[in-house]
Length: 58
Image 1 (cartoon, one colour):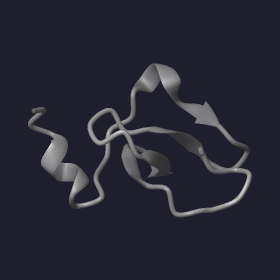
Image 2 (cartoon, one colour; image 1 turned 180 degrees about the vertical axis):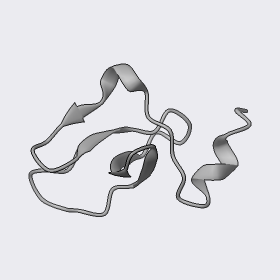
Image 3 (tube, one colour; image 1 turned 90 degrees about the horizontal axis):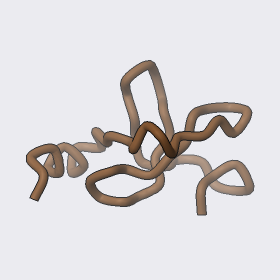
Image 4 (cartoon, one colour; image 1 turned 45 degrees about the vertical axis):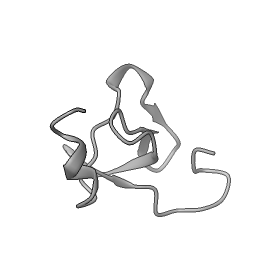
């Protein structure tokens, strides 16, 4: 188990940098620890996907 995994419980995620994409509004990706869709809120601050619709990762 990765030591960063508990941070996901507090909505602090870490993307796999090589898989991050720009959707026109924000950078989006998949959390490397919990495998949930995430979106970059601020520089260095990734949170669980909060938008829905075509811009979100499935």
